Amino acid sequence: MMQHRHESFIAYGRGKRPSSSNLIQIGNKWDVNMHGVKTMLLDRHGFGSKNATLQLVKQIEAIQPDVIGLHNLHGYYINIKVLFDFLKSVNIPVLWTLFDCWAFTGHCTYFDNIQCKKWITGCHHCPKTRYYPTSYVLDQSKKNYDDKERLFNKLGKLELVVHSHWLKGLVQQSFLQEIPIHCITSGINVDVFKPQESISGLIDKFNLGGKKIILGVASIWDPRKGLHDFIELSKIVPAHFQIVLIGLNKQQIKELPRSILAIERTESTAELASWYSLADVFVNPTWQDNFPTTNLEALACGTPVITYNTGGSPEAIDRYTGISIEKGDVQALANAIERVGSEDRLTYQVACRNRALQFFNKDDRYRDYLNLYNSLLFS
Image: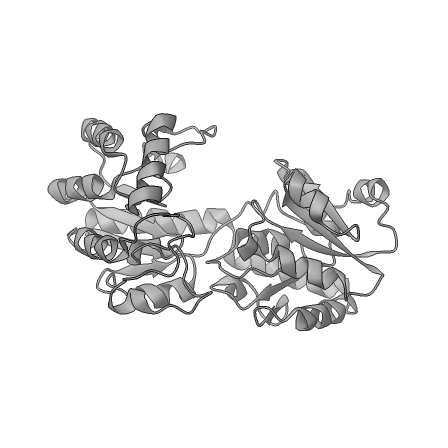
């Protein structure tokens, strides 16, 4: 936005990162904790943080923005009633990017792992109250669903963005179906994530000479990311394959079999790009997901992707750059890995890199956003 001579303000809940934008923190740690308590006891996630959101509203009124972009609104930091009541009153154009299904359910962020369909006609008696955002006492999924439907459908100038056609299809079955929706894939920095030549250091440091590398990466290895599937996979892949997992915590590392090379999370994108470039195949056995960025990073580094047929994850690849496997079929996963590992690496590298450049360059995708903001502003 600023490169095109616009002024940018970013309001965030927590986790301040360096930015050239004007930054506004919403609330504080105490407020986040109280929102968490309200969620755990009353199952009213998104309806805490009232005072923090009222303060944010005052700051927005002082800024007088021409257009507002919303991103992830769950996470114990904002009150959706206060926010959407304000947005309706000022009638500012809003572009809302959805990263999961929370906006049109009564509780959960994803439901496909249990094949729940209640979100289509109206949530009630939620089977996932003990999952994020966790409620240990009440189930208010029906009230949450009804309130969201009322709040989110009352803005006159609201349009939606999703990163996958999978999520777009779900939104079009939900109570948000009348709101205009656009699909813009995620973008990555293809100048950072690119095939690296300096991978010999990793080979020497971890004694990987002669091995074919199966790489898995996650920011948090919770059950939905498929950590258990990697453990099962380690029992059946041939000995010349080495599984490398990045992003694990110390306890997870202790519990993994020694046959898996386990590495804690790295904040170095250069190091991560080197691992992607070293890998013969990137494996993403995710059980719940929208459009994983790790798939794109692997492709940009010239590495083919094997993923479960989960959400929008398979949309990152085509038949020249990866393979999609049914969820939970670890043997099929192993077979696909052997197939990819036996083929010419250079052919995959060129096809994967070209696909990343064509579809997932962040500069191209950001330009798509800018065009949407302009169309909202001048429509």
